[in-house]
Amino acid sequence: MAEQQQSGIPATASSGPVAVTIGRRPEPVHDVAVYAFDGMAPFELGVVVEVFALARPEVGGLLAAPWYGLKVCADRPGTALAAVGGFSLTAPHGLDELAAADTVIVTGVANAFNGEVSPALVDALRTAHERGARIVSICSGAFALAAAGLLDGREATTHWRYAELLQRRHPLVDVNPDVLYVDGGDVLTSAGSAAGIDLCLHIVRRDHGAKVANSVARRFVVPPHRDGGQAQFIEAAVGPVEEEDDGVARSMRWAMEHLSTPLTVSLLARAARMSDRSYLRHFTARNGTTPMRWVITQRIAASLPLLEAPAGTVEEIATAVGFESAATFRHHFGRTMRSSPTAYRRSFGRGVA
Image (tube, rainbow, N blue to C red):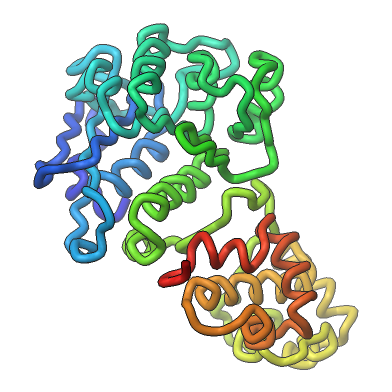
């Protein structure tokens, strides 16, 4: 993590316990509690710390509600917890404080495959939910929410690797393995590790609006938004490499400069100085997708900031990013984002009612 020292987690390979200390926040704050456990993967915990524990002076005048104060909680506070990677840390807070938080985040369970979930955590989750807290899971954390009965009768997601097991173990849960996250209002679940970033940014967006969420994403150096309904496996928006003598890379740079114009495989092959057949073979081997599928993904990505801005109709945006019609834009946007351009703008537009 680029800003580890600010979050209170020292960067160290020491085998001794590492204390997690969250800096003071001006009152009032929205209390966020994250569950730490023996055998945890540090990435998911780090995501929560990065989003909810860092001071955000750059958004101070934009906040719609109190900012967050983070507490790292465990079954036995002060006890060293081993993390994947050979280091340990201590959580200064217990489950009573987790149960009293405004938002509770469970980043995983020790072993999803053997079905073990801390009974004390289950009780704390039920108490928090009954109080009206927002309950959130990342990756295998969904097993803890399911064990507490909080996912019964609800749509939920988890890492694709665990989806079948979660459904089998908790048949009352409607497990959707094909989305990044599910926002059920008071209960939210996300897929694998990186999808936790998307869900945390979605929470910030829900609490404070798109402008604040985009600012947090910018500091995080990640895209500001991937829709929750987006598939766990999508064709990535692969960028060109920087090898000047690489024909495929040269064609990708050229395409990015000409997204608003009609593009074909022949035009891209010409920019790469290859035959169409050779270009198609080399491009697909390099990027794991076809040239035109890549172009569509780039056009959808280019449309998002335009949709988040108040100016421009869907038809104008479709033209600006290179789609031949608004209908074509809507079709590809729906396939990629599992949403419509209008719905995306309504939810995440800046200054759009």
